[in-house]
Amino acid sequence: MDTITVQPLQWSELSALAPELTLVIAAVLISLIDLLLPKRIHREWIGILSLASVLFSLYFVVSTLADRYTQAVGGEAVGALQLLNQSYRVDDFALLLKVLFLVGTAFVILISMGSMKDDELPHRGEYYYLLLPAALGGMMMASSGDLITLYVGLELLSITSYILVGMKKNDRRSTEGAFKYAVLGSVASAFILYGMSFLYGMSGSTNLIDIAQSLTTHVAAFQPLIYVSFLLLIVGLGFKIAAAPFHAWSPDVYQGAPTPITAFLAVVAKGASLAVVFRIIFNVFFGLGAESDTEGQRVFSIYNDVTIMLLAIAALSMVVGTTMALRQKNVKRLLALSGIANAGYLLVPIGLNILGNTINASVFNAFWYYLAAYLFTTIGAFAVLMVVSRVVGHEELKGFAGLYHRSPWLAVAMTVFVLSLAGIPITAGFFGKLYIIVGAVAAHSIWIAIVMMLTSVISFYFYFGFIRQMYMRHGQEGKITVLAPQGSVIAICVLFVLGFGLFPNEVMGWLNTLFSIPGDLFTLTP
Image (cartoon, rainbow, N blue to C red; front, top):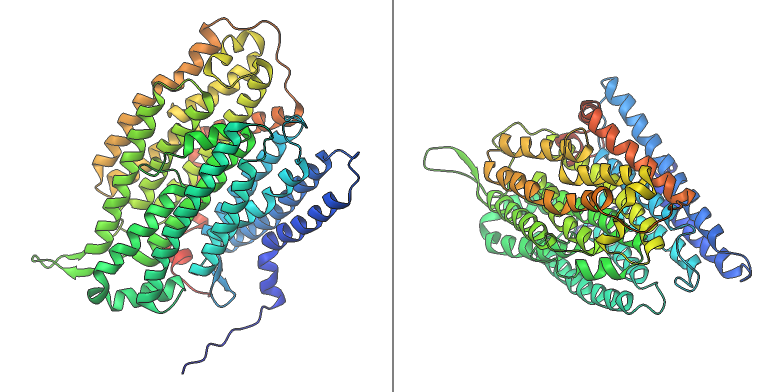
């Protein structure tokens, strides 16, 4: 019987886990502080401590990325650091995504401060520190090199999200949304676990690299089960990213949840699940079914089928999300449907068949760039919605009527976010879609590029509905007061949306220097 030797963590390796350990320690300490603090002390202090913890974790991630970038510029080979018996990977793929998850979480905490009444959110301390394990779960999903680690991160993110969705007191929609989210989310997790069990049964391992090697060796014997495992996984993960046809929960949950949590689900939870899809496709199913056709050309039958199914789900998500949003008047539901379409856009670079072309980082770079653009655009839009809905008392599109006359800078900021979502030039959203379309054409998937362009054009109708209301309609009189936390988030998001749109080549050049698919996803410790 073979024995498995597990190497203990060294101090140098433990330092690589500093971002995760920061959130773990902070979550435990802050929960104890919240328990011991007298009730007369306002729980906004818990929010400040949670924000500081997230920023401290972000500092460790950025420092590691800066060191790796310096080494890459100097010509050194920078591979993946594998920890905990190769179950946890610290590579540029994970680090770049962790930056987005932590920035998104920090923004969510910031826009929450002072925006909700105590009678609406009685457990304010729990609300703030529960975001820490949620962010930790997303980070674990991005770094997972093993099915067990991946599932632990997934459930950590999911369970805390269920609780956060139902935090609003005496709100029927919040309770209904949390119940629906928990039930359907549990079913989705069961599909994912069932798909993982097939992978384990075929390979005898939970490590992604070992699974890939085993499936490649025995692909002929296990071909039907490989398809079954993929379908089960994509059904479960399709729910997590709100991709059609697994999207029905999204509008109800987004509408019922507190607005900052809606932003968290739209960006961090969706991004973490997409990271898992990316990791599984490239570490497990990439290049499966290699054989020679009648003309002697090398083909990859299983991988080809997997990419076609992913692109089909992406196309369906774009069409369903865009068409359903055309008649939507509730802003949170509209942004939920927009999120379904954007899940389709983000699936395209993952689903492109890059074999037969040069294997490079372009698909991930386009994926990361668009996810970053979507993060700043979406969180900025939700922050504006929070300001407007607090004044008008509802979340309908008509609440934006006459916004330009009441708060010109807020209207201009929302205009920037809307133009980015629509994909108008000089915004981050435009170049994000452009890079994905160019990648699709380069991979000879012209049909999906056409679907992207058509759905983007159709989406102009409901996105420009915000502009009609803000500039061409009369609304309530009086100026709108913007709280400092929401105002700072809106301003930062505007700067990044325009900055990414004005200097896209600089961002992509930085990504090209730092990341490569063979070097980051397929290598062990150098």
